[in-house]
Length: 67
Image (cartoon, rainbow, N blue to C red; front, side, top):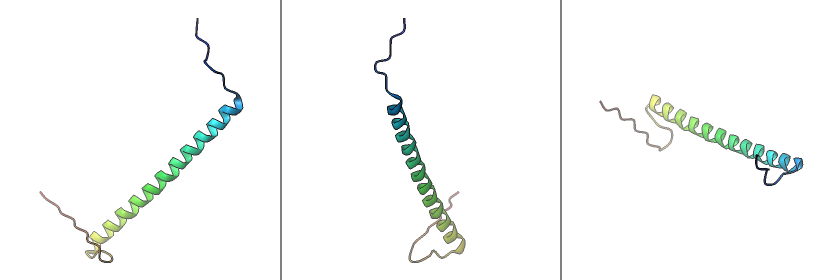
């Protein structure tokens, strides 16, 4: 015989919980998009500085290739 569920939650409680979970996942998605955009900007600035030979401003960019 299967054990009964400990507590049965109402439909409204389950909907509120589901809405909070969806909102949390949406916030995580926005944060991930921001981090991805920031990383792409850093890579683009680095690639541009390496291709140009002169980094923008007083920044120092060093690329070392060892064999």
